[in-house]
Image 1 (cartoon, rainbow, N blue to C red):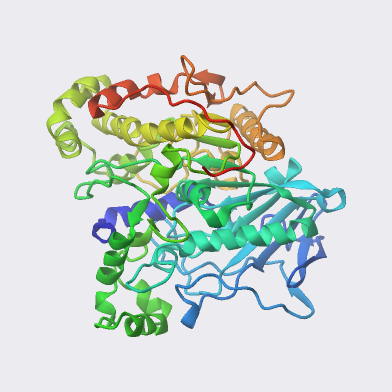
Image 2 (image 1 turned 60 degrees about the vertical axis):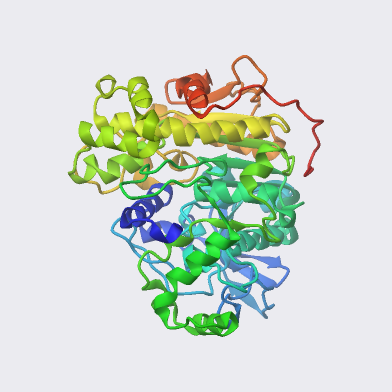
Length: 561
């Protein structure tokens, strides 16, 4: 059950947010409220908003896209915004959705009126009009907010960029008997934001007919859900999934001792989700035989009291399926071709799991030993532990921690990433990548030393402005950042990352002798045998999986079979 996750998961979730976001409150102002700046206005469908204009960018922050999910509207579908008179100030970030601080993410909020978004454009975007729109869904799912992602670099490439707040943790994923929409409120918020974009993009110089949705980690998993959700039809035309978890499972112990296996990392049945809701809220004094009365009680509780339940935010970092928002298990729908046929960019980092192993062991002064490696193999793989250990002998790695992180990277992350690219590539234009900068700056305040390599979400600062990471960039990493951002922008513009001046990036072809994955590193950009690099044939044989490709159906611009 999700409620049984250990405290380690909470620690990792908080630290991961700092990896994919920024680390200082000042950075919430990417281009606004500085000396010499001016203001400008735009007309949305609910009223005028005042943003900040600099010599190079225009930024609007804290624009509401849905009504406050408070009181009786807590754990309900997002509702329309009430129009306002006059001009609404949009020169400062809006409130973060409810979340709790952790040792590595010193951010917290008790404000439920938080369904806001931010719009960043280049200086001439509004005048030019018809710019591609990129909508960013941040990761983690229990902490964070859209304003933490400074989109000026993408806006410099001619995009209108929208970053979104959505309900997090228990407020975004809560389930309970009789609760309509159980386990899907975060997804519903994101779709409401995309509908806002469709109605309002033109007011900011954007083209509502050319929208790319992009996300990392939990945000990318959410996009996997949207690809299979009837409610997302027509809301976006391309998608970028970075370190997505939509087709990933998790072996026992992969996230630490005592953490169980999950056959579907991101998805839960309605019953599993409801059971978690009942279990996690049993101490709040609202239990009883009448679910409607219990829900009224729960909705009346102060946010602070809900957040005081241990691990409650992390228990709901998953989405429920078998409902109107997600009618079926998205992993199955993706694998069988029942998803929106839009061009896709999908990838991961070379060393995904080093972040989690390093944080849990070497980086905090508790080295992962050879004995622990042997026990972890048994926990994860049972009778196959010896076979896995022979394929990944501890003596072949600089440390047991790197041996274990490589095993989990290959078995969990690479296997799921490759399955996703294969499912996509059989049916729609797909561009697979691997972020391969093993010197990507690690700027979390971790004691000790650990080789994090190309760690999970380490590529995010290569697309979004983040001075805490970029102050460590070498000249080669600056060039890599420019190239990755150019690829993203071109993909958002045309549905392919290719244009003159960039290294050619062929489509991922599952039926090819070696399906093409683009390696993105400071010393080399070009093809890599992703399956060979991550020993996926070994894992397929161990799981008894077949390898023959399915026939490619006729491609459509957008369809859901």
